[in-house]
Length: 329
Image (cartoon, rainbow, N blue to C red; front, side, top):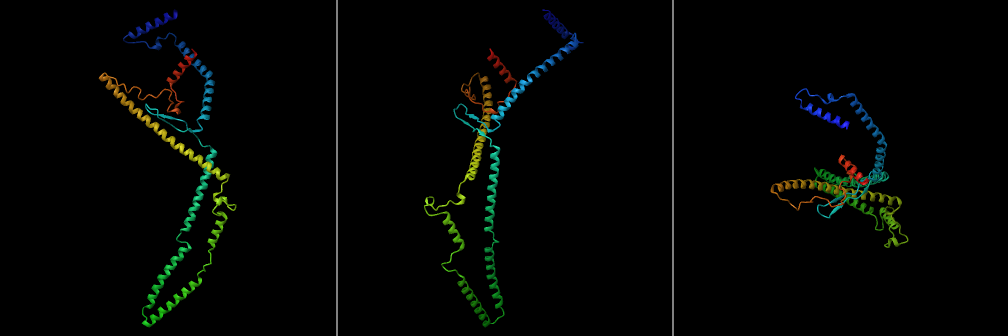
């Protein structure tokens, strides 16, 4: 009762102070014992620091536990499962839960791609050497064409200034030379029984590797070296398959996330239109029934943004506190 009387007296003095037109007293001047008020404020701060110190271990304990759960279940994922729902429809699409590629797999893929690139470079170099116009075959053809043109020009130059008999004799000599060249060329022609060594080598390799028409059923069949399968080749195929699966899932998930963003844009535009429609209904004194619940998600629908599960504000904390109090009751 005494405290109530003192409080009533303070409120009365404060109201009288507010009614004074000038020379009003400040709140600090109305305080009877300013040192005691400072003492109470310091004591309250010490009590708050003590409570924070007592709760520090509990806060750290729960934060560490949450961080361990996050590292175990979420840090190993590139994408978690996210569902995108249709408006007033049962249609939905979800992403693939895609784990991250392990460090060992990434290193193996890097070495494998390096091998593939080196093999491609070697094959390109071999093709470039085969098509080089500076190769021996190309040089011989170019030299043959050049010599023919020079011979004709030389014959025309030599024929100038000679009599008709001398020119006929010169042409006869040239014919004799060409005839002798043709005879020599015919002599150097290989016989019909001659086989090219490269063809013989190719035939021997084909007989050793291809076998007969029965192929795998033949006891002499030998699988070509390039087609033989071993543990290392199969392991490389498994690495490439893992990479392809991860790439396909990632591309699909990006498309689903883009669809989710587009859905949010559509929702924002429809909400603006619904707000404008509500203003029109208020002016007309009517109510549009079909727009009720147009953008509401069905009951029990999963969240479209599960990555925001750790974002909270003061309202969320108060709601959680009320939930705890309701459970205790």
